[in-house]
Image 1 (cartoon, one colour):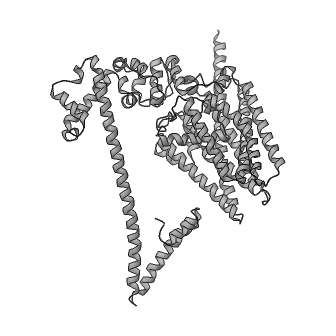
Image 2 (cartoon, helix red, strand yellow):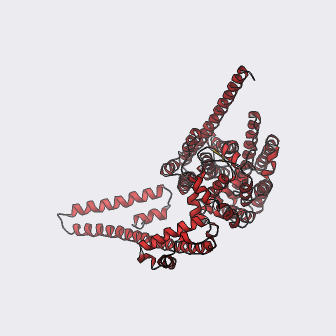
Length: 606
């Protein structure tokens, strides 16, 4: 190859790279604009509802603003729970999280916590859709259907709902494009990700297919649920609750009788239930294809749920009619719109199937549990995309990434884990990059979460030697804990953990297991003690509040007894009354209701 040809090849490579970067920036910018336009439309529509001059409109406005506040609060909670830091949490509760994550993704900066930059952006978009856009679209659709024959529909109201639908569909499609084409997911989980083709034209057709699929699915589902809700709210809640429980049961059995979520920070029972609720809401009306990933919804459940949901929509309308529900919209219009939404969704799925890579068709329907996926990656993955953006070859780095990224419920068996960790002494000598990477934090994950039976002898000796040192340093504490007493006894005999032979490893594992159990009990006791202290603090605060209130009353009565201080008495009473009335107005304004407002007037709000 001549020099001129090499120069031309390099120019073409740089041109292609610049075009890809420009295209990606345009996609991110459009998704960001859609997010904030949707947020702005929610505020404007809520204001218009409150200006209608009717109680239903005021109630709808309070619902919209309440859901918006709850959405931002929950996003902040998830952000904080996954260790993304105080600034990211503040960005979430102020509505700036999409901008925050887009900035990190565009600049290649790695955020704090469990998620990589691209996964954090994907989860932010998922939460925006599930916690904000979908509830807003549903509430507006229900309100308009319930008052279809009473209201003069404004262009803003209809446009807001249509904008919600389009925003949701576009966010789902661009999230899929970002995730499926990212180096992280294509390298680490190539068996699932990689269905977007290399051709820009085919990618565009696939994005259009996803938008059609989601928009049609969303239209049909929200119409059916809005019709059911307008007839009976309790029936709609019962239907959705039953579906959510069935979905949880399906996930439980398909994942090998494990239901907790697999990301550290979101694996507690409460967090796992919150994640499941978010997944259900998404599958209810905006099924992200990424949810087919094992451990989320899974491919077989995802595919089956799509088919079930499209068939169930007309059944919901039939059930509403059978219950004698009153419809405020012509039934023929409802049937036409559900049929149109279903048809558009099916056409979108066909476009997706025709334009995606044929090698990944099975990832949308063939059963694969998350544990099975990790076992497959444990055996076969030879190249890993690391948190710092570098690539590392070899199965050791791959396995360290799996250990660090996911909870122990889904790891390989203890025997396989023990056989691999037997190389620990080699790693301590060679110090490979992944072994000491602070972002991966592999050593801390092993020390804290690997079962005692799988820990290598070196780690066991170090942990117990540390505990032995603690037992020497604090004889008062150790005397109340049997395992620490055992360490002291062992030390008093002159034995050292470094002198124990390999066959004695089982003894060390048993002692470490007891030590961990005792630490867990002590931690639980500390939590209970802190809870009791907090309860006492709250009780004292309430008592102080009422003592202060009664003190004001007593002072005002005392001042009233004298002619010279009666004016001061009126002032104290006036301040008290103004405070209670202002609190009552604020309580009523934020939708607490008349009972809560009356409680404020009586001084019972604390």
